[in-house]
Amino acid sequence: MKNLAEFINIVEKINDFVNSIVWGPLMLALIMLVGLLFSVRLRFFQVSRCKLWLRHTFGNIFFGKSTDKKGSITPFQAVSTALASAVGTGNIVGVATAITLGGAGAVFWMWLAAIFGMMTSFAENVLGVKYRKVNANGQNYGGPMYYIENGLGVRWLAKFFAFACILASFGIGNMAQVNSIAASVKSSFRISPAITGVVLAVIISFIILGGIRTISRVSERIVPFMALFYIVGGLVVIITHIQNLPGAIFSIFSGAFDFRSVTGGITGFAAALAIKHGIARGVFSNEAGLGSSPIVHAASSESEPVVQGMWGIFQVFVDTILICSVTALCILTSGVLPTAQGGALLSVQAFSTTFGGAGEIFVTISITLFAFATVIGWSYYGEQCIGYLSGKHFSRNVLIYKALQVLFILFAAVMKVDLVWSISDTFNGLMALPNLIALLFLSGQVVKECRCYLRDN
Image 1 (cartoon, rainbow, N blue to C red):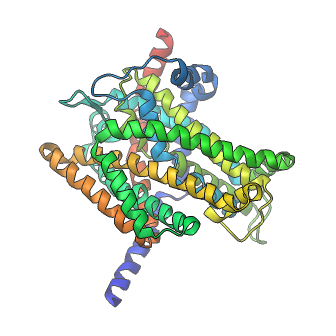
Image 2 (image 1 turned 120 degrees about the vertical axis):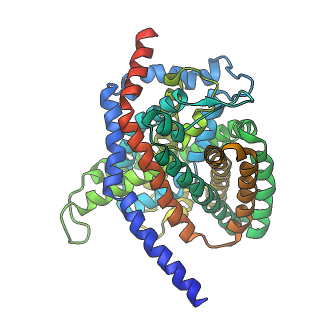
Image 3 (image 1 turned 135 degrees about the vertical axis):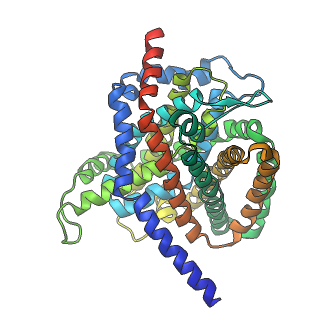
């Protein structure tokens, strides 16, 4: 036991060191700069062409014709699966943590990260569709590993991305989410984590064994419901405290540029905390720049890279501008601050000011839906990266991978996963680095694709 404790301690120290680099100021600055680069080169497409991308995304949901082709998934199914992966516990717990650590001003920087992140996600999807492939069953597949290898021409970097994504799919995409579900269900309904784990393992096994078609169909049904469920509930809380909304908005903007010292230390420390935690939570939530979502967007039946890129803008908008903002405004208008509580407990307190004892149940249901959707979405990301690395052993290795995903669900429900959270966070950063390098070097292709599309349409 002593040797095991020493080993874990060494792993924690190594992980903390690597994490401080891959999620340090330079990485966050790089993510923001990539989004700014595409925003400037494409003349702030996310704002100037707002009507265009809304028509091709939101408008297509209600009025568009189905483009579902044999062996492929629709663009809406693709974005639903991507949102299933992105909209996780971070939208509830992560936002609350950002406000606790960085103050209300963190929300402003979270919004700014989302605005730039829209164009990062756009670029990822354009390249994902441009460099995707078609398998023997007529299914489209792709992702950063393909545009890194075939566009950038650096195969070892593509393999590095795939390896980091596989490990992240077991951590942040599986164990961390399942553990959050089990803990929330135990707290609200007194159900044993072991029982929760078994139920989740059975349900999720049927879904992921069905492949992308089943995953996308389930996501298509779960994501709109869970998003509306949470947004409507949050709006009720905000409306209940509507008199506090102007003050909350003011605190967001004033806190973002609060250059006073928090603890009597260096001037500007408050603003630095707001920037750090706001940008970090924004990136963690919408995943723009990580390279995860283009894996499923590449499976879409949409043939035009730029149109699928617009779904990336839509994805970040829904995840951060809508869902994360609801969480933030619920906390800031409900009067629960200042408090010693953070994370899920702070969100529970905010919803409880309106729903009373049902507030905890509401948050538990939301966390369960968000985390469940994340598990099935990330399982596809890991599956595709396994496939990229496997070659002729694709079928066997993917089956082993899916079996391990189910097995990890059982373990995650009953164990402490603090170290898993931390390590997974590190591998997310390691995924982002090769992806951002590819986006920078292939930015000219994205700009060319977009300009050609706008010229011809």
